[in-house]
Image (cartoon, each protein chain N blue to C red):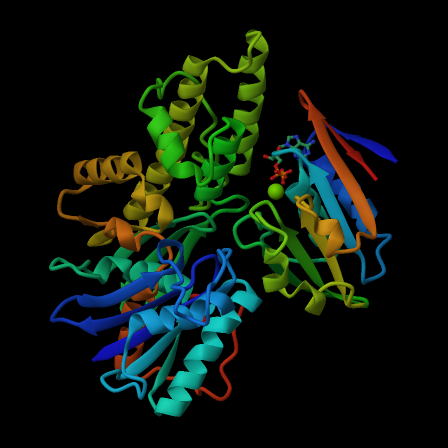
Length: 138
Length: 345
Ligand SMILES: Nc1ncnc2c1ncn2[C@@H]1O[C@H](COP(=O)(O)OP(=O)(O)O)[C@@H](O)[C@H]1O
Ligand SMILES: [Mg+2]
């Protein structure tokens, strides 16, 4: 499906609709250029699951963890591999301990850099933007 | 008191030995992985070790630190317990626990942000006065913290999306500059007009002390696309420098404005600027100048450049203050805490 978004709120709306289909254990790749709305999308997902805290960009932290308590999903992992330079760095992240657990859903911004060799993506979402129209496709 | 300190919360692996002086802390040793080379004598030739491979760095750095193997002369161990990446934090925390347990020395758990606050107490004869207001700006942080006394903190505001340092790095990428972007932008900005483009100053008018930089990132991207479309060969060098200078000015204006707003609300005796982005000269000079206009009695403090980025020396300083207050933790039960809260300390 291809969705068009004209502002942040519409992007979060699309994210909430997507979030409602998740059951737990999914890993979602978020692909798209700088400022196309990847972090905004995760903010919408976190809101859908009733997370009350602030969703910040994980570019520097690499992994943010949001605890939620609605149904079987307890943890949203918000990751960003923008700063990963070499696939060898994945081993130091111990992702196998985190991903795919039935109580966890994971979102990965910038999953380029051979992430596919280490992580299986349940869904891939593509973000783009021409002028002020943002497009979201999954 | 002499403290051995360990920092592995993010990219850097760092070890330090810090000793107290009358009013500040003397850094006897401070080794940071990004500035160190693993020597071949340690277990054969080690290939280039990537950032965040703390497990590969930590013992070579320990060897480099060259302290007695029985811990003689060390009075306490300080380790960053959070916030940060669990697999990264864990390496430092486990080393701290093992050393504290086997040497039978007290162990303190330090919050990484607390370390950045204490970076201005390192190697100085003019430490801050309380209450101190701190603007902590780095790749991952943009926070305003009121420090009422040693160990007493109040979080006043923080970024709601991207950190200031992250904005520098991402704008650098948009302008085709290498990582890390901060110094590159500053250099290019010297050739550009800081008033050339009126980029948004996010949240300047809001009453709270929070920050937002993701909209600025998007505004710069649109500006780069616009200017590149005007010329056949892409972005013109003059436009590029103007964008860099105008962007840097927008970030500095926003940070300084909010800090001064916090000064008006909290009436501090000192203002501290720390974290990786505090190395930015325009930010340092603008904040110092504006502050002296607002109230010349408020003292201004910024760390020596070597202590702006992540380092273990600042963890040692914060840890020593905790050790003096006897805020020890049990080496058998300490856990890394990825979301460690400064206030819950
Ligand atoms: N339709 C839209 N969807 C999402 N963000 C938008 C939209 N229109 C404008 N924006 C702005 O673009 C920026 C998107 O930033 P962010 O979500 O951090 O992007 P990314 O994570 O992809 O770099 C925000 O500042 C937001 O206000
Ligand atoms: Mg993002």
